[in-house]
Amino acid sequence: MQLSGKPNISALYRCFLLILISCFTLPASSDNWSDNLFFNGYYTLDLSIADSDLAVVSSVGEQQQFEQDKLSLQNSVLGGQIEYQFNDNLSAFAQGVVFDNDNSVSTAINWAYLSYDLGNEFKVRAGLFQTPFLQGTELRTVGYSRLWARPLTPGTGASGINEYQGVDLLKHISVGEYHWDFQLAFGQAEHDLNEVDTNGMELLSARLTYQDFWLRTAVMHAEYSVQTPRGQTILESGDVLMVSLETEVVHNQWVINAGFSQSDSEVTPNDTMYYLSLAYRFDEITPFILMTKKNQFFEAFEAPQVDRLGPLSPQDPPPAMPPNAPPPPDGDADAYSVAAGARWDYSDYFALKFQIERLKTSDDTGRLNALANDESNIATITIEGAF
Image (tube, rainbow, N blue to C red):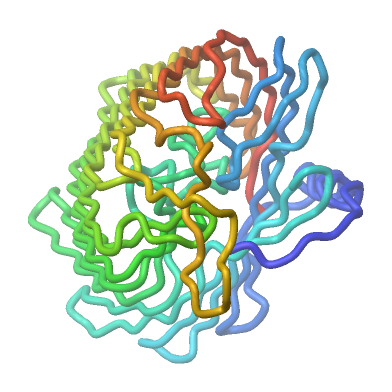
């Protein structure tokens, strides 16, 4: 949920400079302002350069545009988490970020909820949440939490749904060395497109942890309607079903990460994504290779047509697509990437990352904003940490 924008972009990078100085002079840890109030901060200082004009997945969801052969810091993020413990059972939590949005400073709230501990490792929460579809969605802004330089999931999240407002129930169960975490959620989802209005949503996720192994799956259903940019209804009531599965396996120093997600919807595109990463830990340094593919499949639908550009009177319905409008998109839009790099954990709260990535895009949908059929390279150095 984006809140505001300010024109002074240099102020953001002055903040980064002060944080980096403090990382080398002060111990990094959660700041306990009082017995009940806690604060944590995190940041990503991202320096990237691409060999062509390029749009890439960013740490805040919105795609960032890179100009050919021009160094850029625009994928940098400064974030904070604050929690207040009212008593042993009730607490409030919020997380927000400051980021570069088209050369101006913008802010956004990612999480904001109340949590109540019911006992017996059972909690209920109410508020604003990120959709738990692949770790790249929930932890998108927290670059320090991931091995790679950029998030795994595109800015559109899970079939266009990045966040929701509602109530969720959390349950933890331990059986020996096996630990289960379940999440059941109900509420109102927020879609990435203004033309899509979501209604109710239901979600169930489960995670199994055993020593250095974890496996997580999620299933989500949402109802929605779709309108044209002119306000004419294309789909009055539709459904989308989304599933995801991902895992991490550690054997000796080898680390394997893999994930898959898919959605089935009406009018809006069906999303499919998968990734595979292989890494090897040399004490503080972890080199890795990463492969990802993202596909959007568009199915043509019958768009309403009119022979006039506007209503004749206030009682007339708003017009649909004009007669000369292009046909609805039909086909596949694909994005592939192969990356290699390394992460250096300089300290418990400070890391450097180096990554070179090859990207390929193809689009046969016929849409106006189609991806260019192109191949590009991008090199990135990030400084990330927590304080």
